[in-house]
Structure formats: C-alpha cells, structure tokens
Length: 275
Image (spheres, rainbow, N blue to C red):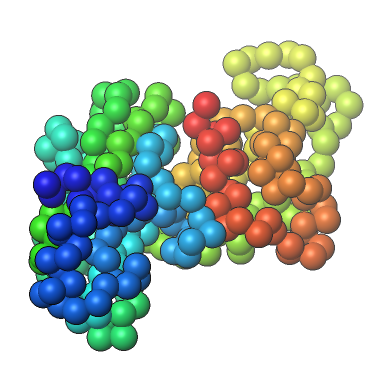
C-alpha cells in the first residue's frame, strides 16, 4: 500500500479513495497542495519550470548536486532518508541554508504550508563501477507512511581530474562569463612548434585545448568539474557545444547575459561533456 501511495504521488494519479476518505476524516479537507510528496530537481531550480531528475548521468571522482523538495500539510512532521542500492555506493550529504544536516533528518512542513527545500549532493569515487545505481530520496510522513522517489543514477566512464576545487554551491554564471567571455588566446605564430608528444609540426589554433580557470573556490564545484572535463576537448568544440545549450552565439550572450527561460539549459552542455 505504501508503494502504491508513493507511485500515486509521483505520477499525479489519484490516491486510493478509501485512503483519502480516511485522511479527510482524520485531518479535515485535503487540498492538492497538502498531499505528502517528494521530488528531485537539478541544482539549478526548485520550481515547477525545471525538469524532475530521474536518471542522471554522473561522472566519477566528482560531486553531483540536486534539490530535494518535500510537500505536505502545514505543520506536518516528516523524516528524510537517502536510500542506496547497493548501500553506501556514493557519499550522500543533505544540506539546508548552507548547513550540512545529519541523515536521517527530522523536520516539519512550515505552518504556512510552503514546501521544505533541501539540497543533497553525491560523491562518486574514481574507481566506482560504470553502472546504474538506485539512489532513492525518501520521506516518512504520517499518515502516508513511506514515500519514495524512484531515482536511478547512471555512473559513466568520464572521470574528473584530481584536485578540482570549488564552492559547495553557487551560481554558475560568473564563472561561465569569466571562461567564455574573456579575450581568446593569441593564435600560435607561423612556424611555432607544438611541444606535446615531441611533435615538430605547427600546432593548429583549432586544436588548442579549452582554456581552464584556476579552481580556487571562485566557482561552484560542479562547474569547476565541467571546466576540467572541457579542458580535454578542443576549444572550438567546447564553444560550439556551449552555444548549442545556450541557443544563441556566445558573443551575443557576453553582451546581454540573456539565458534560456528554462534554468536547466546548462545541463545540455554537461550532457555533451560526459559523452
């Protein structure tokens, strides 16, 4: 019965009539907003305009960040868990207001009924198997019982280089501006020799690796990881992939800073980096 209730919450389907009738009798009229539920969105959005995250691709030796959103009747207590199968495959952390919280964590829905919003992040080890793993945020809230969000991560071959550092959370825009809007490096002079692999041929400008930032904590760690992966690609390819995600020329964006309406647009760029 608990799983059926969870599936009903996640799918938007009506709950069993007998359960709803019992709930109404116990706590009074039930609005759609007061039905217990849990959902996961990207690190870039907590609103309904972002996509729910069900099966994200995650690189190894890297952090991944998500929002965990809990809804329910005003003032209703609940407990948050992060389930894993296999257990302890990833390092899981729960955060709120830039404070790390213990797991499991007890909380309540605000008296005014607003959703409770948390961040959680996962660390995937360098030697983690390339496979699918169940990472299931779940809450316990009476009278619904357990409500499980059926999330499954896909660990991919891509591995972030060692030593990448950054802020735990933050906006990616300043770092993206510094990366893509800075003056491009000068093209090699005619006859310049490439030093990589002992080659004696001139290095074509299009083959230069993408410029990388100093990962000193000035950008979110997930963006620093993106830049580290991008540094392994040709700069022209990286710029083209970023423009596809942005939906417009980088040069125009550097002038007006207008980004797509969907706040998850940057995930399209990350998807390309992980291929």
